[in-house]
Structure formats: C-alpha cells, structure tokens
Image 1 (cartoon, one colour):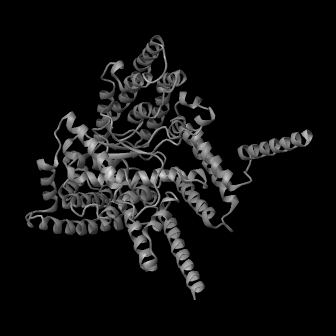
Image 2 (tube, rainbow, N blue to C red; image 1 turned 90 degrees about the horizontal axis):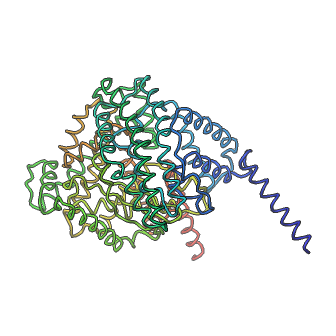
Image 3 (tube, rainbow, N blue to C red; image 1 turned 120 degrees about the vertical axis):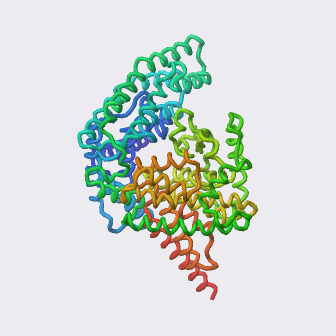
Amino acid sequence: MWKFIKYSLLVIVVAATVLVVNAIWFKPFSMRVFYDRVMLETAMDSPQLLTQLRILEGFGIRGHNAELGDLSPESTTESYAKMRENYKMFQSYGRDGREGQDLISYDIFDNFMGHSLEGEKWRWHGYPVNQLFGVHTNLPSFLSDMHQVNDATDAEYYISRLNAVDSYFEGLMVDLAIREEKGILPPTFVVEAVIAQMENFTSSEPAENVLVSSFVRKLESIELTEQERNAFIEQAEQAVAEVVYPAYAGLQGYFVGVLPQTNNDAGVWKLPDGDAYYRYQLKQYTTTDITADEVHQLGLSEVARIHAEMRDIFDDLGYPSDVAIGTLLQQLNEDPQFLYPDTDAGREQILKDYALIVDDIYTYIDPAFRMRPEADLEVVRVPTYAEKNAPGAYYQRPALDGSRPGRFFANLYDIKATPKYGMKTLTVHEGVPGHHFQIALQQEMTGLPLFRSFLPYSVHTEGWALYTEQLMADLGFYNDDPYGDIGRLQAELFRAIRLVVDTGIHAKRWTREEAIDYMASNGGMTMSDVVSEIERYIVMPGQATSYKMGMLKFVELRAKARDTLGSRFDIRDFHDVILKNGSMPLPILERLIDNYIAEKLAANTEEAAVES
C-alpha cells in the first residue's frame, strides 16, 4: 500500500513538474495557462505592479518590494519583443471552435494585444512626465500609499527603494532625450508645471518630505525598539537627501534645459504624423473606428440636448430664462448655500459628507443590483502635494489580498470646486455604483483568466461610471433634489463638452485658450477645474472621449434589451451580465448583450412550450 502511495505521489509531482516546465519554457498545453503566464510575466516585469496587486505576498514572496522598475528604452524594446512573441503564440491556438467565455476571452485578448502592438509605432509620442502624471508624482504616491510596512523587512525594502530612485530616473532620462531628438516635447505650460512640481517636492527638509513622514507613520504600527525605529528614519532621511533629491534635481534640470525649445501648441497634430497618432488614440479609447469629426459633432449635439434639459429645471426653480446655462451654473458655483468654508474644518466636513452620501446610495440601488463587491470603499483626500494639478476626483482599486479597500480620492485644493449640489453625482461616479462596483467586482471575478480582472478599457470603466449617474436618477436619487439633478446634468454636460474640446485641440488645432473658453462658457465650472481639465486632455489625447462614448453605448444596449424583452426585461439581469464579465471593448460588449437577449428569449420560448 505504501509503495502505491509513493508511486502515486511521484506521478503527481512529475505531472506537475511537466506542466510547470511546459507553462514557463514552451507553448502551454492550455489556453488558460497561456493567459495566466502572460499576465504573470507582465506583473513580474513591474515590481510596483506586484506591490500594488499583492499576488505573491500570500506565498511568502516579497523581494520585489525592495525594487523599482526599469524605465529605459531598452526595457521598453524588450517588452515589445516579448509582446510580439506572445501574440504570435496566442494566434497559433486559433479562434475556431471557441464559444462562451472562452471565445470572449480570446477576442478581448486579441483586441488588447493587437492594438498594443500597433502602438509600438507611436512609442515615442506622448509625454511620460507631465503636470498630471509621471514618476515625479507617481513615485511618491506609490511609496506612501502602496508600499506596506508590516515588519522590519518591509521597512528595509522601503529604504532600498528610496536608494534606487536615481537609477530608476536614469532610464527615463535616456527615454526623454530620444523624444527630444524626435521633436516630441510637451507644450511650454506643461514643462513649467513639471518644474514647479519638482521644486515644490524638494523644497522641504528631508524629514518633512512625504517619503519620510509617511514612512514614520507606518513604522509606528509595527513592533520595533526605539533604536530600530530611529535608525530606519535616519536611513530614510539620508536616502531622500543623498539619492532622491539629487535625482529630482537632475530631472528638473533636464526640463529647465528644454524649456526654451517648447511652444504653446497644444494638440498632437504638431507631432510627427500627429493626425494618424490621434486616430490611433481615439480607437484605443473608444474601441471603435469613429472619426474625430464624428466625435466633435456628437459632442456639440449632446451639449445642446443637455442644456435644454437643464433649462427646464432652472425655469422650474425660477431662474431667468434669458441667462445662458453656463452663466447660471457659474452663479451656482458662487452661491454660499452650496459652498463649504475654505478651512481645514470645511474640508474635513466634505469627506464626512461624501461618506454619508455613500451610505444613502445603498438605500436606493436594490431594485437595480444583485451583485456587491466584497471590498469596502473609503473616501480620502488627494495628497496635498499633488492636488493642484490632479483631477477633481479619482478611484483607486482595492488590493487583491484585501489589505487595502477601494478608495475614492476627492480633490479639495479649490473649495469652490466642490459645490454641495454636485457631490451626489461625483460619489456615484467614483464610488457606488460607479467605479467601485465595476472595478472591484471585476477584480473579484473567479473562473476566468486573470487578465480579465485587470484589463483597463477606459470606454467601459468610465462609460459605466457615467451611465450609473443617469441610472441613479432613474432610481429616484434626485426626485426631491432639483439642484442635485442639475449637478448630475452638469456632470454629463462636462463629459459631452470633452468630446468637443478633445477633438478641437487635437484634430481641429484649437489653442489651449480656445478650449478653456469653450468649456468655461458652456460648462459653468470653476476656472481652476476648467484649466486643469483642459491641460489634462492636452497630455492624454483621446482619453476624455471614452466617458461619453461608453455611456451612450450602455444606454443604447439597455434600451435594446428592454425593447426586445419587454416585460421579461429585468435590469438586474442586465447589470449582472455587465458586472460579472469585466471590462471589454464596446463591440464585444454589444455581442455579449445580444447573447444575453437571445438566451432570455430562448428560455421564455421553452417555458411557453412546456406550459402549453
């Protein structure tokens, strides 16, 4: 009997070894293993991504938390070469004979890899360091928010990362120099903003820098002697002073040097083959072949429609009908009844009120949702060192291991940019049932290839979040709150305006100032928000179009399902189909909904046949 058990165990070990060797060094036997291998390869190439996902810590593997990635052009070239190799292997499996989730996974992966490889042509286009994102702001946020310190080893890893910042920046400097040679430089205002951000970041003593102060707070929660804690703090201060600050000074010096070469042209039309690059960006962010002209005209039409709906509400509230909508919205932004005190206490109250709105939303959504994410949601403030140029709000996905909840970051830099009448809608979008439901549930999916949990199709994720704003109106969230409904429509108007200004800047050669004027006069936003938004679109061409394009598709598909199924339509079924399948290109989403409709009709036909 013992010989049989030993033989069985040997067979299992040998079989497992063959599978592992096959998965790592050869074409995997299984498509599913291939997907997971590619996902793991991608993660293993990014220590920061591994830290964020925390997929290895559960196995006792955490050495990656002592490292930073590689920003050099050589690393990017290697990544594209590996991507081509993987895509060739993927195509060898073939699409024929696949169905159900297997076919959906195949088509999503095909779309993502194919479009990513097409992007190799444009690898030098874009501005990897800008006023909105880049290593100079992302790295401090990552180290303070993502790098966990649960014991002395984690603290040592943190110090190692601080001491690696100079080599991390070196690869980026080579990349920037190549872009400069190709004539790809950001507009003047971007370079000036980046210089100011780095000056601000390095202006304090090392002990007061967020890289040290956040580390000190983390050390307080672990068991260390006072001597050990002080030693770690001293090492962090030394690393910031001798490694981090000099690295930032070098990067800042580069931008000071290129500033005289820049100009104020805002759109990517100014770059080599800029019009073709923008077509690529539109396809990336809409997952369709829609043209810039079509997007622009759609935006103008939607702005007019939303203005008309807002006019009806303003008329009911007694506002003068001869005053432009943008002007009325600007007046609301200045109305004291909708503003918080411009104080620390006022900002604290905003965060508390956001949390109360989250609780209130949950009392409305049962008729539309069965699924709920396991991860919690918390509302936090955008870090003060980044808030001046950060968007008005954003969502951060939870950690895979449950150690970090989903987070709704609220920007409190300009108190007037948070009028009370708009807070409900912002909470819906960034929190529940917007990004938190879609992204957290996608991450919690089981039974599907791992890549399905993380692919970032903006047109789906942002389209869903904007769609839920209208959904909450349908559920009665604003029935007794006309100003809240104005806030909802203003948020939708904001996304419609994006269609106009993004295409205006990058395809129609609008200046930064022309785009600011259009958004300010039609959207009624505070000027600080208008400026930061327009400057965001300049460095992220096409991305701003994904919100409204995605929302319109969700609304269209819901109407299609309702009209086809009639009394058999249950909106909870419709949302289940979307939320349990994760983010995907719009054509695949439409096919998924068509399948759901067909299955529902077939099931009802079978029921009718049985009853007869």
